[in-house]
Length: 396
Image (cartoon, rainbow, N blue to C red):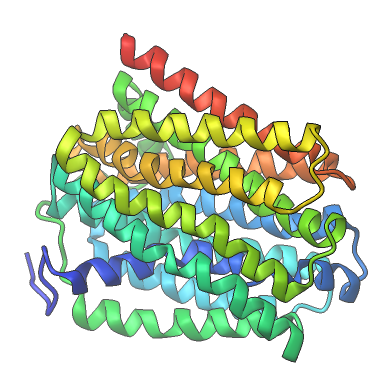
């Protein structure tokens, strides 16, 4: 194994891996305050503007099909560099899109690139760590990554106010362009034994079938998919609800996101401690309760007619605290049985996570309208569904 400058168990390694996984949230959260302006500037409907979100999630899901197997076969670093280069190309295309159709297409290309670093960074964690330590590392990465959704909407709101909607994509391009040099010069090649299996669609499908034969893997993948689908329902609907229904400006919307992000960061920080003290399974159980409680509280607030945006923000902060508690240990436990296929396990996990979110986002875009009720129903349903799935599969 070729060693680079960074070493396992160092904060520098954790920070770099966290920034690689942050490309997905950055690509979404940075331009969220500009969605209404994009809809006006490119003369599109609300549902068409939301397709830029669903298009990204679709590309993000499909891209993960191949990156894991490629990195198992050819190594983590070259696949990582290729994904980052594709991300930069797609992001630049977004900034110069003349119409909504072009923007939707380039968002898809941007996502194909961004999915690579996410898959590879999770596989690198599995290469370097095992068991509870892997769950702790993913939780640490999630806590650091929480800075991105905290800062990105605020920065995006400022860029939108000062320079227009293209500025957020140019900022994302600048961030993404710096990462290939860091990956090439500082990250070690973590894979110990490369897979001898050829990379082909049939081989990938066969590999996914092998993964699905593990009952615990299926359960954790389902928990991750439901958990993230509820989060994406908020991401795709909150912009239009908080600005269109509650009348928040771009800047006020961006700062309101800090409430929700604070819940996620708190959940990730708490997960690091709980995984060490009570184990990953019990940590997930606490996260499930937060998901179900937050979703139910939001639905109750909407049905009660609470006019303040905090009727949505505070319950969502509880939900995102559950996300921070649930995702890192669930991902670690899902990949734990497959040390020799960490890339493939990470790929299929991401495919289900992002594919489910893309479907939820597209459906929500069609039924959202001028009310927060559809969004609240979806978030409550995904929280309750994740809790039910976890409890039923854990008993078995």
